[in-house]
Image: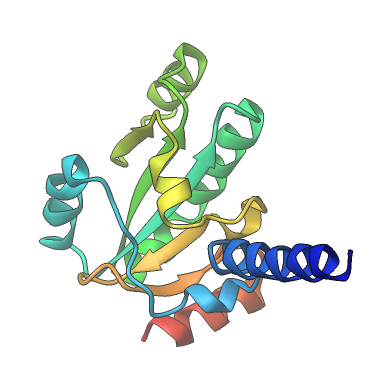
Length: 168
């Protein structure tokens, strides 16, 4: 009986250790300096943008969960586009889910000029361990695709100032 208890305890600890090693990091700061992994089919989109700008704001939007949230995120980015331009930052929007007519119509109506990528299989989110909190689904990356900033940079004036310091 003691042997069975001991074996169960050892197996439980082993499973716990293995499962913990594959879970995403809870701390947003743990993303800084890591390379953002993108699908090979998206390489040309990223490469063409880096010919024009030094940095890219990658905004990941879960459009399947909350279409109004997706549209609101786009409006905030568009409203702050002058800040991005002044800081030599381009923008790529990555939507999780299949192209939805309401989102496409909205983006057309508001004259979207940003490249859009549809992450139909959710590979971007799972490969990069994107956090579920929408506040931490924006990344500013450099030409090597290393993350220089995580989080919505326009949350408030102080956040934008911290972001500018971090990406210099």
